[in-house]
Image (cartoon, rainbow, N blue to C red; front, side, top):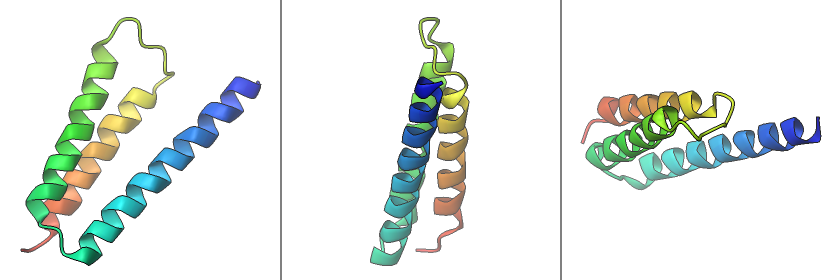
Length: 80
């Protein structure tokens, strides 16, 4: 039970940090291309973790890939 609580806490922390990173980069004036590339990197990382047979992250891999797609969509919507 303790492992699940710790995993959920770290997942929430990582998602919050990524959200803050994207928000600050949008405010700072980072180009949309860089945000799209960051989202694609996250999507690829999640995809690699999904196909790894030794990965036992209980579905977090899919959330990482989904978060990468969302960040890419945010970068796509930003006008340069």
